[in-house]
Image (cartoon, rainbow, N blue to C red):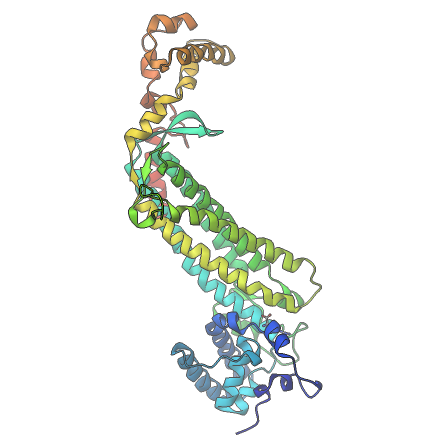
Length: 465
Ligand code: ARG
């Protein structure tokens, strides 16, 4: 068999090198321990490249067939866990190419014609990420469906809405959950948009300047399902905005998840008691026998920090890089991989947990009755009786102050007392002061009136089906 220059990597860069790398430098520069995750994309990219080289008459049909045979063997070996990854061969690309040459000889050495690891790695990461995006999009859909399902059962469940974490106005619990559906819908849109820019082919850029071989880049793009080819070779090998954008998407999504997780934690606490989470998402305490802790929700909230951290890491990684490829880019992988894993698992677990929440409508309603949540309704009532809004606001403030001093709700004040705050008040006021009256009154598109919430659910169902 022909000698394989990749058997000893320092020989791969030619006879120019007069001393081998130290073990520390080998370990420091190697990425194979983590980038082997790209192997499927790497092989797919190589096969498409070889097919095109053959079509263009750059390699022979026999060489192409040998490359395909070798890659089939390598695929089987990796799948079976038999492939021997070598640190000395630095990364996934050199490991696979070296093995290919071992298996098929010179045909393997011809594969890298018109290609560089620079356009190869950029292609692999894009291909891999596109596959992950295609897994995440349905998970974002499932998350929304879980929320819509719970919302639909709770259109008429009332809880206090908060601003500044102070009781503000009563809202439908269904409406509250649909707020998160809006967020995740935007996240899905953002991700679909990111996909367009991920799905462009770098191959053909070679090291940085393009290549002197008559490559057919469009053909490779078509084979690999890319929407088009990167239009500038320097940009193609050095751009990582697609990874930044993806991580920005993931950070925003994780922040949405974190806000939801925070609410679940609050709602489950004894002081709220609005919901319960199924036991399978909670853990006990090693010291306090009474404890059931919402660990999964807390972890989901906590994991948003690591994804936002990856975004900062990747942005900083790119900041000082001159054109074109720099080894810095090898550092894009771990944060990107971890971002994908974290957002994927978190979406899955949160959707499941939301689907299983136990809602306690009485506790929610009791809380809504506590904080004078219908005070705005009383002000609106006075406006309808002809008062300017600012005067109505002032009159109601006096009424609330009085009710607080008595320790009762506005609706518990006698009509004669209420009339003391404004003479125009009549006994139809009590309908206005109920939670349900308050909800029904907010019948504007996007408002919390049950009729509006129902209409939103219909819209979401149609969109998500
Ligand atoms: N392992 C490298 C990376 O992840 C592959 C590209 C290396 N290119 C090079 N010229 N050293 O970026």
